[in-house]
Structures are given as C-alpha cells and as structure tokens.
Length: 250
Picture 1 (cartoon, rainbow, N blue to C red):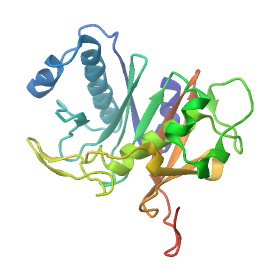
Picture 2 (spheres, rainbow, N blue to C red):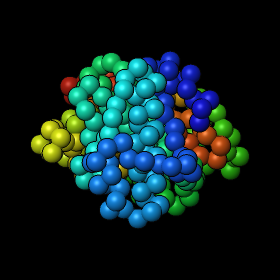
Picture 3 (cartoon, helix red, strand yellow):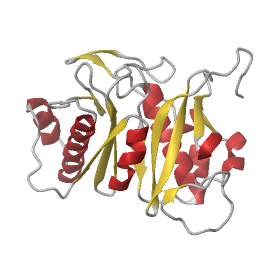
Picture 4 (cartoon, rainbow, N blue to C red):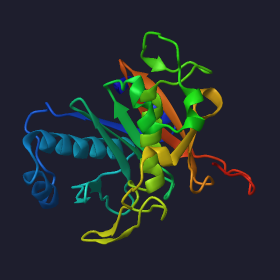
C-alpha cells in the first residue's frame, strides 16, 4: 500500500494506513472513546485503525485533526477537514485532500477477491459487458488499459464512487443518496440509501472508469482502481465532465 503514495500524491491526495495490530490503540477523544466502547473487540480495533488512518492521510496533506466522531456509521470531520476511510483484512486506509472544498472524495480497499457470482449484486445487465471473461492470474499494479474488469475491481470502483457521491467525507450529499442534517457536531453526512446497482460504471481513458448516478447522470466521478496483491484499491480522482442535456441512462 505504501507504494501507492506517489500515485495518490500526483492526484492531490494524501494516503493514510493503519492496522489493527498496532500496539496500544487509543481513542483520540471522548466521542471516539464512547463510540469504541459500544463495539465488539474486533470492530473496535477496525474503528480506531480507521481513525488513525484518516488522521495520517490528513497529515500527509498538511492538515492536523483531533478526534473524529461519527453519526451512525459515518465519520464526521471538523470544518476544513475531509477524508474517506476503508477497511479490509485488518488494514485501514484513508485518503484526504488539502484543497478544493466540495470536491468528491472516496476510496475502497478490497483485499479478498469477490467471486464472479457476486456480479449480480453489483452490476446490471448494461454493465456486464465490462467483465473480464479470461481466466488470468491477478497481478499487483495498475490494470492494463483496455482489459476487462474483474468483479472485485468494479465493486471497488462503485464503492469508492458511492462514498464520494454521497458526500460522506464532507457532510454534503445528493438527495437521491440520502439526506444531510444537523448532528451533535454540526452538519452530518448524508446517509446513503439504495445499492451499488443504482450506480452505472463505464470505461474512460487511461484505464480509468467513470461512475454515474443512474437517477442523475450529471453526477459522476472518475475512479482509478489499482491492484494490490490479490486485491484492489479504488479511489476517486475528481468529478467527471457532465453528460449533455439530452443524455440519459436507462
């Protein structure tokens, strides 16, 4: 994962990494402590690792951050701070951006490959042509341009986009994914509703993909998916140019 730092830095993103095995994990404040106290042991370690990863990602772009409370299951960041957190197999990662308030932010780590049968939970019929039917070894590194996508890659791309389009890093989200409101710490993140099948993914240049809301195709983000060992890491690069006024998705 550390090898991804230069790639993310080139996109204006900071990367934070933490593991559940780090000694002496401690909450950064009373809100984190209260949240962690109500969790089973394994979930508590994941929660605290995610908060550490988020603070490290923010530190990588020159921003400090104290405790990160939550609203429901979503992190709530102080003004001027935003990060996206993901967990997989005992590893927590986060990405953060220094500038550009309101810019989409999302990431997803999947270290356990998904079976082909999971495609029906992620894709609709108009996306199945993107799948790679070849039985090839899964190698680490950037995916080849023009190659088909695995279910794991498409899931990660949609999951990262879902976080960005729902505004979970900023507290701002479109009504079709959920409603924002006021929480104990001020504006709370939107609560995503629906499923990943409510997003549509399509190929873009340089091995990237574009993920759009089916209900509002003008809301779209560009996502890069990078292979990490036998898994993948997907992250949002930024908004995608909007479709023309007459364009629509079915």
